[in-house]
Length: 424
Ligand code: F6P
Image: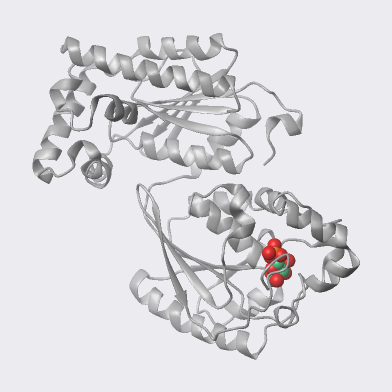
């Protein structure tokens, strides 16, 4: 997951313009794309025209404001769309590598303007159109997201739905689904049931397609945990392939009880482990088939594998200092950095996106930090610092607009004696 500059690939920046009627999951997709891109080493930003409208004109515009026949409303909407476009171009002129322009962009005329503006500045433009033919998906989307929107704050839900439907039918009248031969586009129908690609080529665009093929909007729960305490944890040793201790085994037992409780509520829950002994032993009693991923193995500490943090500090002081200076980018000699780990975890992340069933991931401190950071939509650079204690299950519930977290400290309690370079 390196940036184009570091891989020697095209340096052309990318503008992604969303297309589609309201309540087709465009903002959700834009948010997901943005997070995936930032975890892929890009600098993306989303320019959401609805948000510009609310900031400039205030929330709570009624349906009539969206009527193309309403001159004043149309001019005001064109103005905020333009402001967002100017900012998106500005972003790409500076540090940004990807701009996601999140608006309906439902007319050919509008798309031609967007394409010529971005292409005029030397950027590649890809349109991502979301089409939903399934009324149940649209209805669920309206209820899950629009009723929460500041546009309808404090309003009677039925009145809000009625107004929103009126807004929708105004857009429907003017909607021209994308079919322009000159444009590059990805058409996603019914949240990935069908996908149409037109003139999509190149490294980053192909990866976007792969990502878009896997994402869905179904809420589900993921539980993250580290393995039970291992003998290496006990002696503050880095890495290795140790077994779990007596306390670690107690945690494994409690985890089994926790799993059973959750399985009663959710049905069968998939379980992933790493290929290392301590995660396999921790998950052994969970009553389901487990998948052991090598990609979930702990960060590779290279020449420091098996050493204690104190030994590293004494015998490899310059390494310890370099790590303390930039823990995210620091790469152990012949080992990995957190940044490398993110790259290694990409297939796991794609599979996490694709899965619709609840999932338990039994892994390791550094790996769980990266997965937690991704799922909670935190900056990749913050990964090395997330608090992921032993003997604790972190429950993450994804929703249409955010992911919520609950921590279950199952115990038994273990000692956390020092903070040098890491916590054990
Ligand atoms: O200490 C346990 C452990 O899983 C080590 O094997 C691993 O190197 C470390 O945690 C990762 O944490 P940190 O990056 O803070 O050293």
